[in-house]
Image (cartoon, rainbow, N blue to C red; front, top):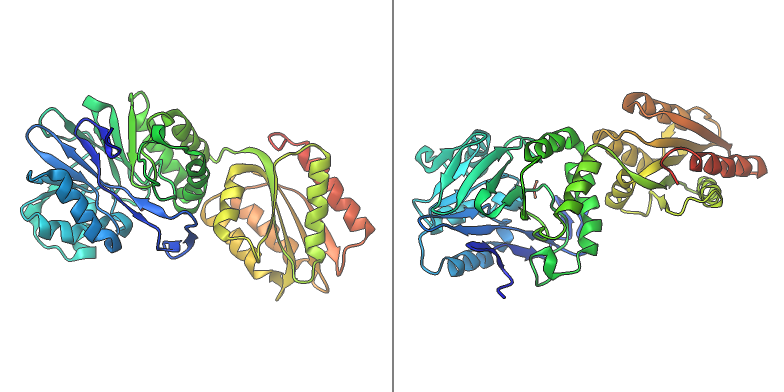
Length: 399
Ligand code: FEO
C-alpha cells in the first residue's frame, strides 16, 4: 500500500507543520497542523491542488517533483488564497514556468495582490459548473464563497467521487504517518474539527450551509480538505458535524465561562456547576477565562447547548478576559443557546448585568436568569446559583 495514494492518480503532496505554535497568530496548535496539497494525474494532463504555507516550501517542492516522476505539471488549481495554502504559489510558478493557474476571478486578484504576479495570461478563470478534462479525470468547479474567504471554491472529480473541499471539513492536527481516515484513529482529529470550525470558519455558517446545499445529492467517496485527514470512512460523520455547527446546532451539555479576581465570582460558577450536575447534566465544562485558551472556550461554547457567563466588575464593565470571550461569541454570530449570566460587584450593580443584557439584545439570545452578587458570595447567592444550575438543566437540549 502507498500511504500517500488517495485513489488512482490522486496523490497527497502536503506537508506537516509542528513548529508554528499559533495558527493565524492566535489559535494554539498542540498537535500541529497539516497544509494539504494533492497531485491529480489524468492520462493527458496533471494538476496540483493548492500549495502550502511558505515555511514548508522546500519539502513541498521536493514532494511534488518526486510525485510527478518527470511528467509536466499543467495546472495549479487554487481553492483558497489564505497564505497557509497560497504561500508557495510564487515558488511553484518559478519551478514550473508555463503552468496555468485555475481559480475564481477574486482569487486571481488576490494572487496579484499577495504575490505581485502580473502575468494575466497565466490565469484560467473558472465559474460555477466549469470543468477541465485531464484525460479520464474531470475537474468540475463549484463556487463556495466565504468558506472561508470570498474567493473560495471546491473541485469535484466525478469519475472518482472525490471532492477537493478547501478549508471545509478541515481540522487542526498534523498527519501522523497516514493520510486517509481509514488508516488511522481519527478521534483526536474530530475534536480538533470542532475547534477549527468554531475558531476559523464559525462566523460563516450560512455560507457553509449554501455550500453543503450545492453538494447535496453528490455521491462522495473521498473528501480531500486542506487540513487534516482525507475523509473516506467518516464522510457521513464530518459532513454531519459541519452541517450541525453551521446551523448553530449543539450537543447536550453546559459551558460556564467566568472571570474572577479574588475567587467570589469563581465560587458562583462552582455552585452553578453543582446545580447542573445535581440535576443530571453529565457534560459540564467550567472555564476560568483568565486561564483557559480562548480557542478552547469558543469551541466548547459552540459545541454545547447551554452557555453561562459570569464576570467580576472591572472598570465599570466586564472583566477584560470575559469581555474578549463575549466579543468572540458576537463576532461569530452565536445563536440558539440556553443562556444565563452571573456577576459580582462592589459598588456598581448594573455594570456586568447591563453588559450581558446588551450582548443578549444584540445576539437575540434570551437571558434565562442573572445571579447578582454584592462583594462576596453568601448563602443566599450560593442557593440562587445552585438553583440556576438545576433550572437550566431542565431546559430543552441541555441534559
Ligand atoms: Fe486553511 Fe482559510 O485557510
